[in-house]
Amino acid sequence: MEATSTFVFILIISFFLGSIPNGELIGRIFFSKDIRATGSGNIGTTNAIRALGKKAGYAVFVLDFSKGLIASLIALWLCNVQMLPASSASAVFTVNDCLAASFLGAAYGHIFCPWLKFRGGKGIAVSVGCLFVVYGPIPAIIEVLGFFIVAATTKYISAGSLTAAIMCPFLGFFIFWGDWLAAILCAVVGITVIWAHRSNIQRLRNGTERRIGHSSPEQ
Image (cartoon, rainbow, N blue to C red; front, side, top):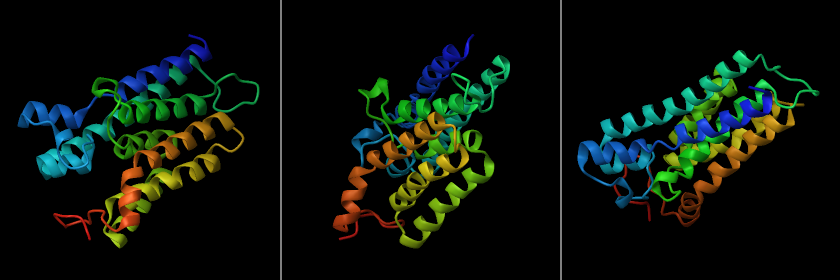
């Protein structure tokens, strides 16, 4: 499998792994409930907690995190099998490019889920799963710390999520400096995750976003 075929295959398989709607499946199978009919209507962790309870919500997080991690591990394995260069100006696609493709594919599969009319989650858990491979453990932990510090300080989960999404392009360009395709693909993911939080951004501006520990939005 040549480099171009490897890149495209990774993008496709990561998209379909990312598209597994864990929140919807858990709601349907174990609770006979469509979580899209509750709260924000998305299939991610926060809404799963709201619709199905904490245990089910945390299960959704683990499964969404895992599909991102698995997508990037598959990409890394395929790159090693194909012996692609880690980074080279002369290479069509590098390992970094293929890892970034797995990140883009998994995040887009989750956010634009084809099984749910291209409506899914907001991409945080699946993205963090990818980043432990794509960026490496230390940058991924920096992302997680950014999320927790801002979420704990502001009491808004969405503010923490947006912080992690904003950090993503900057870390991507720092890590992949000179490998512009990889850096740009990672930046596209970060920007898309911010876009997926557009309703949260509007509620934060209006002062109506739900705070951690509050059963109703702040007024």
